Length: 528
Image (cartoon, rainbow, N blue to C red; front, side, top):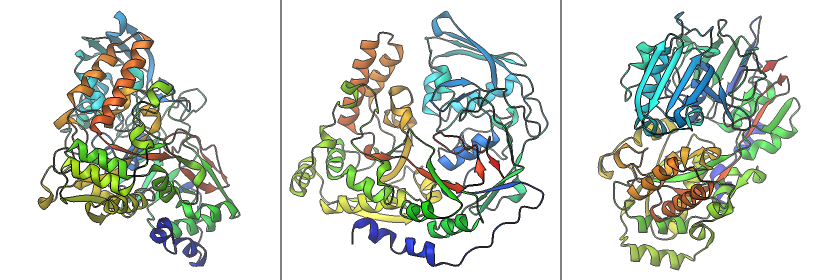
């Protein structure tokens, strides 16, 4: 039996054999029931970088700018904007009719406070903060940024997918950035129903009747956000076969990420549709802890990268959906060959077990323990964790494969303690591949040390390349610096690229208007 078959066991059989669930009764309220990718453990999309929290945040909170299906940032809460002084001054005018769910009007000072909190949590925000001379509310609807250096990338940065710049009331935005907000109050098209929430099991959202959608065609996070259902419910069914059964029988309307091995069955099921909503794909990677031995040794990280076969890993991850795997992946998914191919020899050159063991020996590895945070409840991270653990064991590494749910991984990865006190060495996760077309949002490849994302890589050289790139205006110079960025990333390996994939979603055929993008969104969807 192959590795994926061993890991999945009889899940596919269970999807056919288990008893059928009773369809939900809608009554007069039009309710859309979705199975999200994993249980929701945080309500603060600025505090947490979880995709599930991001998805919840997009429903409840609004953004100043949203990206359309092509990835172009467009004004969302902003009615109009003006860039002056070569990118050193930005003026943003809020559109009228913006209200928070607590009944208070959205004011520029709320947005200023929200931006200040976000800039303390997000690496891209921190880059912006370093350039700000002043961030102020000129009046109730006008936000002004005055910058010490040109920053023409503001729209792109404020429309980012992971740790989005979510706007919230000033009273919530004044919450310590390193603590979660006490309640989820935004101005988005859905209201969070706190009383209905069952931690790790159930969440619900109601249509925000006061929300004024832009009078534009919807396109992912841009344009209009018309809501055509009264209520959205998230049933957090962690067993893939059970979720698939619920979709087939009509108990649920939508599965965000079905188990790949069950897709052939779902594609044959009456009343079910499947499709790829995220055409850009997800960059899958292993994040080493750069502060603890042995993963703080770049030579050991390079040997680990040499031990990992992207095609075999993605075969294990994507299973019954092989057409959607992406291999030959580095740090920048650039359309420029001279950037995309830079340093890729480490990924493309397959080495024997003996050769990788020699690399580890030369790097000084002496059998030290590596703690792998392995989420067993995540459709993709579970098989990728299992197969990467085995690949590293095959070359002689001592892998302590600690199994837990994804919420626990989210908590454990914040620890900077030694391994014997709850610390960690590696975990696998993803980032939106479109963000890694150039250095601007390739945040997990950055090397800011203590202020970097979990794993805390410290690489002054790549930071210098990034800063120079930000100020470059000549296209040839930008390309050279992008190539240098990728080459330096392959020297220090802030993360180890494992490949990528496009996620197939599944829904009942009475749903229409589903929008494409890096995350599922619930506006524009109709249920007949």
